[in-house]
Every structure is written in C-alpha cells, then in structure tokens.
Length: 188
Image 1 (tube, rainbow, N blue to C red):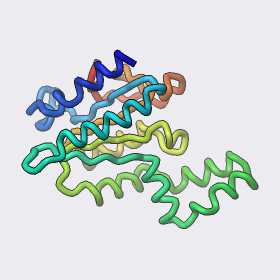
Image 2 (image 1 turned 180 degrees about the vertical axis):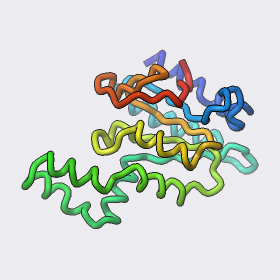
Image 3 (image 1 turned 120 degrees about the horizontal axis):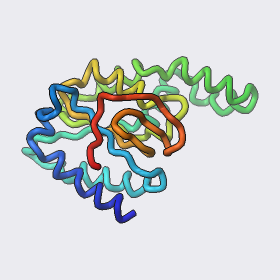
Image 4 (image 1 turned 135 degrees about the vertical axis):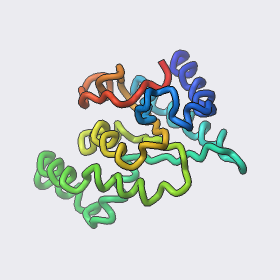
C-alpha cells in the first residue's frame, strides 16, 4: 500500500503541469493516461480520487475535473432503458449468458460516449472510474477507443484495477482486456 500511496501522491503534481492540460510532450498523441493499481487498493484509490477533485475544486482553477463512473453510468442506462428492475429476474430465470447478451446489446460504447458528451460541459480533465465494476459488460479498451472521437483535446485518466504496460490492459492483473497502445501510464 505504501507504493500505491507514493504513486497516488504523484497525480496532483502531474495534473498541475501545463503540458498535461495542453497535451504537449506526447508526440502529438492523444492525452489519454492510465493509472493502474492492484485491485486490493480500490478503496484507497476511490478515496484519493475524491481528494484530487477537492484539490482542484475552487474558483479560478484552470483544471475542471469531471468523473465518469462507468458502473453508475451503466445503472443509469439500464434505468433509462427500463430494464433495471428485470435484470435480477432475467439472471435468475434465464441464466448469466442471457443476462450478458442483454446487457452487451444496450451497453455499447456509443451509449456511454453520448452520455459523456452530454455531461462534459466546460470540464477539461476527465476521470474514468468503475472499470472493474462493469466487467465483463463494458470493456475499458472499447471505451478508450471510442472516447478518442470526442475527447482528443482533453486529458483523460482511466483508473484501472489491474496492469497496463503501455501496450495491453490486464484487468485485475488476470484478464487480458485487449491491446491498447494509445494511452500512457500516468505514473510509473
């Protein structure tokens, strides 16, 4: 946990750097970052995200952070599609495979993308959280790939419970999500 805390302490100074907000120094790549951590540090990371947001929550700051928790978004989507109340019944009566098919048909990256676009406002730093909580219905590489279309000028930090080596995402350090080369590790 000491190593995790030391890595978390590097996030605020990184966000404060001008090149972070400008996206400079990345060889004209998109400003997408992954903060990876061992899954047992989830609660520590969640608390620290609140701390980061408070740090920049003052009048006149030029960092306006918005957090998109994929799990909360998924719940919101199921309620909008009027299937939230049927999810548990579906799993119980028809099994996990049917539930998985149903969830993945409406929980497409485009739906999340549209919500992010609608809620973004004048925020200029995006946090993506809840990655582990929505697996396997929503895959993090799909979200990142689709976010590129909308947020290519805004820095995005995905908080990822697993490992990211700059080439592939391994959720919970066990499941290979997919190859993703376009993000940078936020903190080594």
